[in-house]
Image (cartoon, rainbow over all chains, first blue to last red; front, top):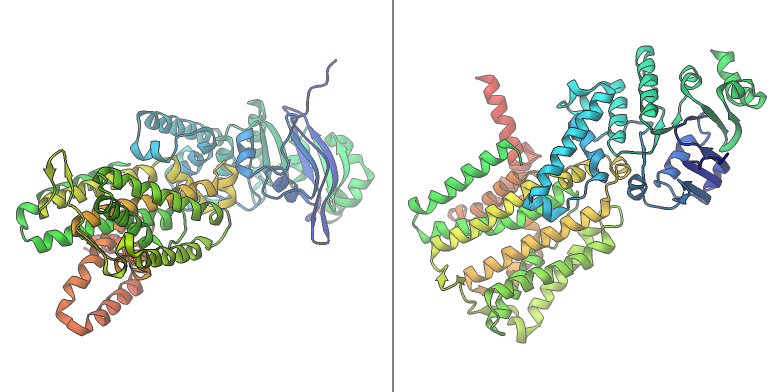
Amino acid sequence: MVMPQPILETSRLRKIFGGLMAVVDLNFKVMPGQIKAIIGPNGAGKTTLFNIITGILPPTGGTIRFKGREISGEKPHRIAQKGISRTFQTVELFGNMTVLENVMVGRHVRTKKGLIQSGLRLPGVKREERLVLEMAQEKLEVVGLMRRANESASGIPLGEQKLLEIARALATDPQLLLLDEPAAGLNETEKLRIGEIIRKIRGSGITVLLVEHHMDLVMNISDEIVVLNYGEKVAEGTPEEVKGDEKVIDAYLGVEIRYA
Amino acid sequence: MGKENRRAVFILMICLGIFPFFIRSDYYLSIMIFIGINAIIVMGLSLLMGYAGQISLGHAAFFGIGAYCSGVLTVKLGFSIFTAFFCGIFLSTIMAMAIAIPTLKLKGHYLAVATLGFGEIIYVIFNELLEITGGPSGLSGIPSIHFFGYSFKGGWRYFYLVWTVAILLLIFSLNIIHSRIGRALRAVHGSEVAAQAMGVNVSQFKIQVFVLSAIYASVAGTLYAHFVTFISPSTFSLFVSILLLMMVVIGGGGSIWGALLGAGILTVLPESLRAFRDFDILVYGIILMTILLFMPEGIFKGLTLSLIWMRKKW
């Protein structure tokens, strides 16, 4: 049997901020079609890891491979082009634009009409613009925000802003979607809904890498979990394996159970 | 470009179209021509400031490059008006790229500093290259524009020429704003990091918009040179760069219509303040301060807001 190629693979990935080791020699793989979660206490390096993968931060050392090709050190827009998209822990919407326009920006990377073509409104521009609009509406349907399409993105409730970020990321046609705490600040019903949406996204063939603090959601939807603590991988495995791991309980789960 | 904009452009075209039928005085027509010329530069600046979030303190230099290219090449070297015009655009593009590529890759307002220096260099060149530019005493005898034997001499003909160019560039700008490029630029304003994650090449667009605004200024320079037929360096000094910037701010950055309004107001204002004689600068300053105090987002936004308010009241 031939092992399928991992969609994302890091090897000895490292990030140092001054004297702080945010990510320490991290090796992990994400297989195509998986929902993989990264958990760990605050400051474990999860968001830093996302920022390195998406090119916002350069790694201090090590490599990241996407579909077998090295991507470490590439610019964020190039990485988006290759098929990695993301959402942000603290919502990073374009507050000066409508909900629909936010998703339309997501389509930017898959369209190519330039300044002069757009300025002259050449025939192709109109067609492309129509396709962008249709695609954006379709993605809004996926997360159930169509009725908000023409409202200002900064005016909708937090739960919907989180969904909007997902719709915007989907508009880039990603093969790998990084979700940074999609359920943070959501209530129980919204959490269930986001779990469903994540499953639906995976169902459409997109691999999902997820950072999340809500253990019920993580245990429920993930195929595999990586546990980070102080930038180091403490454990990796299926939800059952991770739940039973001594080191994980020490570093993370134990604390939650004790104070829960 | 959206229904509202299309309607507004249409109304503007009609108003401008019938203007010379009612106003025949050469003085008023020439003021309208100057408004058109300024509007062209200010539209470019407004794209740069309102959409790319960058400030240029050197746009008078691009205006000057357009004007001097047209002037020098037609007067001294006998180039055709068309060729000289494109030489101006070409030179402005090269210069703008040389400034923008290193500075706009950095974050922060390096462009403002770089353009300030650039403006001064160009100003000195205009003054010191005596044999070519005529130095401080200027360059005269620039021919007026004629296409295929049709001369654009005379107030109303030139008025139509300038405003045709201005309207075409207005439509071009509105199209850009309402395209993926405009969306990308607004997205950068909203969240630069998210825009990058959506595949927006931030520095590339900033560079493109800067070059575009330099081309607008160069086009305006050509139109200016052939209208006044005499140019001298003082028209392209730092003060003019700042005045152009003021037009964007007074009109309201981030709106092309605001740019038109700002160009109109700041071109007309000094003319209408002649009655105050020596105190005109003083009154001018007070008016600018009042506008910015009560309409910090510019007259265009201010007027729209007060219209909405009035509609609610009555």
